[in-house]
Image (cartoon, rainbow, N blue to C red; front, top):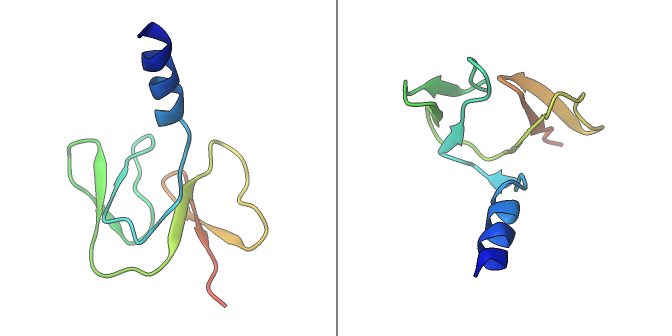
Length: 78
């Protein structure tokens, strides 16, 4: 039982990119470009988005991605 809980907690800590997230967790005090602070530790979109965002974890964005602020990178569209 304890192993299952620890495994579940470890899996929840892995960042998983998703398409067009409506709500993302706020990293620090900023939200990514195109999101507004909902004052509950989260950021919500202003409209429809069709791109992927990922947390930067303090590293530069990988090639093909751009920094959109708030600790997030966005995949560049072709």
